[in-house]
Length: 156
Image (cartoon, rainbow, N blue to C red):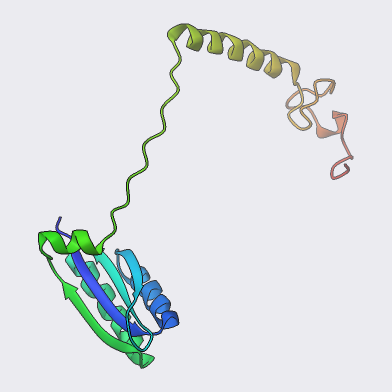
Protein backbone atom coordinates (compact mmCIF):
# COMPACT_ATOMS: atom_id res chain seq x y z
CA UNK A 1 0.00 0.00 0.00
CA UNK A 2 1.29 3.42 -0.93
CA UNK A 3 1.90 5.82 1.96
CA UNK A 4 0.70 9.39 1.91
CA UNK A 5 2.23 12.38 3.65
CA UNK A 6 0.30 14.91 5.71
CA UNK A 7 1.63 18.28 6.85
CA UNK A 8 -0.08 20.59 9.34
CA UNK A 9 1.53 23.90 10.25
CA UNK A 10 0.29 25.63 13.40
CA UNK A 11 1.39 28.54 15.55
CA UNK A 12 2.97 27.33 18.81
CA UNK A 13 4.36 24.12 20.22
CA UNK A 14 1.52 23.54 22.69
CA UNK A 15 -1.06 23.72 19.92
CA UNK A 16 1.08 21.43 17.76
CA UNK A 17 1.18 18.79 20.49
CA UNK A 18 -2.59 19.08 21.04
CA UNK A 19 -3.24 18.75 17.29
CA UNK A 20 -0.90 15.75 17.02
CA UNK A 21 -2.74 14.06 19.88
CA UNK A 22 -6.15 14.66 18.31
CA UNK A 23 -4.91 13.49 14.91
CA UNK A 24 -3.44 10.28 16.32
CA UNK A 25 -6.72 9.52 18.09
CA UNK A 26 -8.84 10.35 15.03
CA UNK A 27 -7.19 8.01 12.52
CA UNK A 28 -4.64 5.25 12.14
CA UNK A 29 -1.57 7.32 11.29
CA UNK A 30 2.10 7.41 12.22
CA UNK A 31 3.45 10.61 13.66
CA UNK A 32 6.78 11.27 11.97
CA UNK A 33 7.66 14.32 14.00
CA UNK A 34 7.22 17.94 14.97
CA UNK A 35 9.55 20.41 13.31
CA UNK A 36 10.05 24.00 14.37
CA UNK A 37 10.05 26.32 11.36
CA UNK A 38 11.65 29.74 11.02
CA UNK A 39 9.31 32.50 12.01
CA UNK A 40 6.68 33.34 14.59
CA UNK A 41 6.98 30.08 16.51
CA UNK A 42 5.35 27.99 13.80
CA UNK A 43 5.58 24.21 14.06
CA UNK A 44 5.00 21.62 11.33
CA UNK A 45 3.43 18.27 12.22
CA UNK A 46 4.38 15.47 9.81
CA UNK A 47 2.30 12.30 9.60
CA UNK A 48 2.19 9.29 7.28
CA UNK A 49 -0.34 6.55 6.66
CA UNK A 50 -2.87 5.46 4.08
CA UNK A 51 -4.57 8.24 2.12
CA UNK A 52 -7.96 8.20 3.87
CA UNK A 53 -6.46 8.10 7.36
CA UNK A 54 -4.09 10.98 6.65
CA UNK A 55 -6.88 13.08 5.14
CA UNK A 56 -9.12 12.45 8.15
CA UNK A 57 -6.32 13.22 10.61
CA UNK A 58 -5.27 16.43 8.84
CA UNK A 59 -8.85 17.72 8.65
CA UNK A 60 -9.36 16.96 12.35
CA UNK A 61 -6.10 18.67 13.32
CA UNK A 62 -6.82 21.68 11.06
CA UNK A 63 -10.28 22.11 12.61
CA UNK A 64 -8.80 22.12 16.12
CA UNK A 65 -6.06 24.57 15.13
CA UNK A 66 -8.59 26.85 13.44
CA UNK A 67 -10.81 26.85 16.54
CA UNK A 68 -7.82 28.01 18.58
CA UNK A 69 -6.78 30.61 15.97
CA UNK A 70 -3.45 28.92 15.29
CA UNK A 71 -3.85 27.35 11.85
CA UNK A 72 -1.17 28.41 9.38
CA UNK A 73 -1.41 25.81 6.59
CA UNK A 74 -2.24 22.18 5.91
CA UNK A 75 -1.56 19.84 3.01
CA UNK A 76 -2.04 16.16 2.16
CA UNK A 77 0.18 14.64 -0.52
CA UNK A 78 -1.61 11.47 -1.60
CA UNK A 79 1.22 9.55 -3.22
CA UNK A 80 4.46 11.49 -2.94
CA UNK A 81 7.28 10.82 -5.39
CA UNK A 82 9.96 8.28 -4.64
CA UNK A 83 12.42 10.73 -3.10
CA UNK A 84 9.98 12.91 -1.12
CA UNK A 85 8.88 10.45 1.55
CA UNK A 86 12.35 8.99 2.11
CA UNK A 87 13.83 12.46 2.82
CA UNK A 88 11.02 13.65 5.09
CA UNK A 89 10.73 10.46 7.14
CA UNK A 90 13.76 9.45 9.23
CA UNK A 91 14.56 5.79 8.72
CA UNK A 92 14.55 3.84 11.98
CA UNK A 93 16.32 0.50 11.90
CA UNK A 94 14.21 -2.39 13.10
CA UNK A 95 15.59 -4.12 16.19
CA UNK A 96 17.06 -7.53 15.55
CA UNK A 97 14.99 -10.38 16.97
CA UNK A 98 16.35 -11.95 20.12
CA UNK A 99 17.88 -15.39 19.59
CA UNK A 100 15.77 -18.29 20.81
CA UNK A 101 17.69 -20.42 23.30
CA UNK A 102 18.30 -23.87 21.88
CA UNK A 103 18.06 -27.00 23.99
CA UNK A 104 19.20 -30.32 22.70
CA UNK A 105 16.83 -33.28 22.95
CA UNK A 106 18.81 -34.68 25.86
CA UNK A 107 18.52 -31.39 27.77
CA UNK A 108 14.76 -31.22 27.10
CA UNK A 109 14.28 -34.80 28.32
CA UNK A 110 16.28 -34.09 31.47
CA UNK A 111 14.25 -30.95 32.16
CA UNK A 112 10.93 -32.80 31.84
CA UNK A 113 12.19 -35.72 33.97
CA UNK A 114 13.21 -33.31 36.73
CA UNK A 115 10.10 -31.11 36.56
CA UNK A 116 7.43 -33.82 36.46
CA UNK A 117 8.37 -35.76 39.60
CA UNK A 118 8.69 -32.56 41.66
CA UNK A 119 5.23 -31.41 40.57
CA UNK A 120 3.77 -34.84 41.26
CA UNK A 121 5.39 -34.98 44.72
CA UNK A 122 4.12 -31.50 45.58
CA UNK A 123 0.58 -32.45 44.49
CA UNK A 124 0.70 -35.52 46.73
CA UNK A 125 2.04 -33.64 49.76
CA UNK A 126 -0.62 -30.91 49.83
CA UNK A 127 -3.95 -32.28 50.97
CA UNK A 128 -5.83 -29.12 51.95
CA UNK A 129 -6.94 -26.85 49.13
CA UNK A 130 -7.62 -23.96 51.55
CA UNK A 131 -4.26 -23.46 53.27
CA UNK A 132 -1.98 -25.56 51.02
CA UNK A 133 -0.15 -26.73 54.15
CA UNK A 134 1.14 -30.33 53.91
CA UNK A 135 0.69 -30.76 57.70
CA UNK A 136 -3.03 -29.96 57.55
CA UNK A 137 -5.18 -33.07 58.30
CA UNK A 138 -8.14 -31.73 56.25
CA UNK A 139 -8.76 -33.50 52.95
CA UNK A 140 -10.35 -31.89 49.92
CA UNK A 141 -14.11 -31.85 50.25
CA UNK A 142 -14.14 -32.00 54.06
CA UNK A 143 -15.56 -29.13 56.17
CA UNK A 144 -13.46 -25.99 56.45
CA UNK A 145 -13.46 -26.22 60.23
CA UNK A 146 -11.06 -29.21 60.06
CA UNK A 147 -8.34 -26.98 58.53
CA UNK A 148 -5.42 -26.07 60.82
CA UNK A 149 -5.83 -22.43 59.88
CA UNK A 150 -9.60 -22.28 60.39
CA UNK A 151 -10.58 -18.96 62.01
CA UNK A 152 -7.15 -17.43 61.36
CA UNK A 153 -8.06 -15.76 58.05
CA UNK A 154 -6.60 -12.29 57.55
CA UNK A 155 -4.00 -12.70 60.29
CA UNK A 156 -0.39 -12.35 59.29
